[in-house]
Image 1: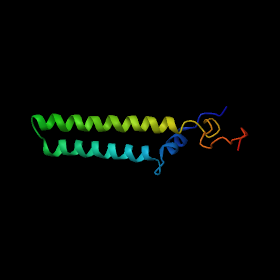
Image 2: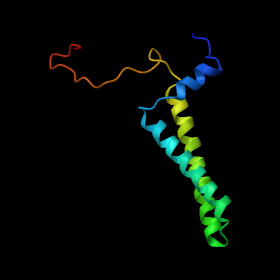
Image 3: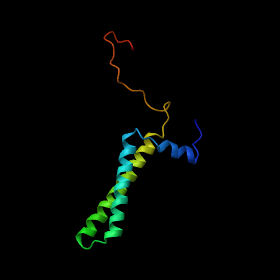
Image 4: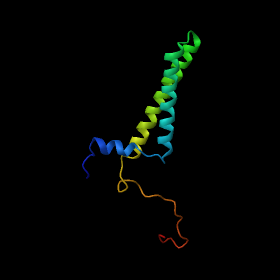
Length: 96
């Protein structure tokens, strides 16, 4: 069993620019920040205020869910993951 990684190692685990979840998480967080900035500067009223607020909160929530999924996806090391079953079995029943 491995010791749990320390703080900087945990954060390094999240920095994966080639992982699609990482890019989506960044996109949702940038969108929610942009909407919050728009809410602060424009000070809309009525329905527009509610729509932008709900969209900003939804984007922030989606970013957190994707962050959690990325964290959980990279939590297991290669030795703990299940082997892929991508190779077809041979007709004689032997393993490739």
